[in-house]
Image 1 (cartoon, rainbow, N blue to C red):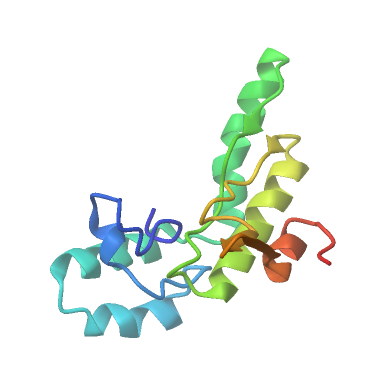
Image 2: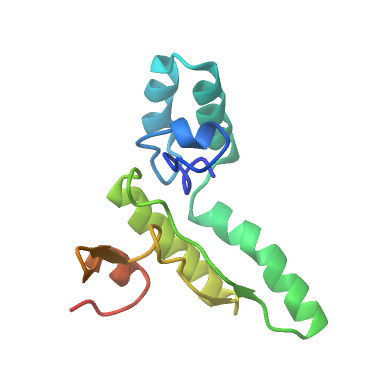
Length: 144
């Protein structure tokens, strides 16, 4: 939630106050932000995110639990939605997270869908739909 829901106004947690949270959770990037944080909730959320070490390896390790569970039971697992709130999160973080989650899911044999609304690769404004090519590419799709 620290990364994926940063700045989301409907979230009733500190995530709604967060901005510019990077991915991966690089201490060299996070430590200066933690040091400057005036809000103790923001400071603690960023510290926890750094301590959890969210990166490709962490994503795959967490998803492997589901992959192993499904394999042991002979069932198909799917991740029904993932993404990062695009109105606030840095594009580089959104792209890296999306790529890492998608590639990890595929490696583990877990199906996936993307939550598109404000988390995916399509934008709608004034009746027009546009494709976010960077996110589409992170999903392994060809963007127009």
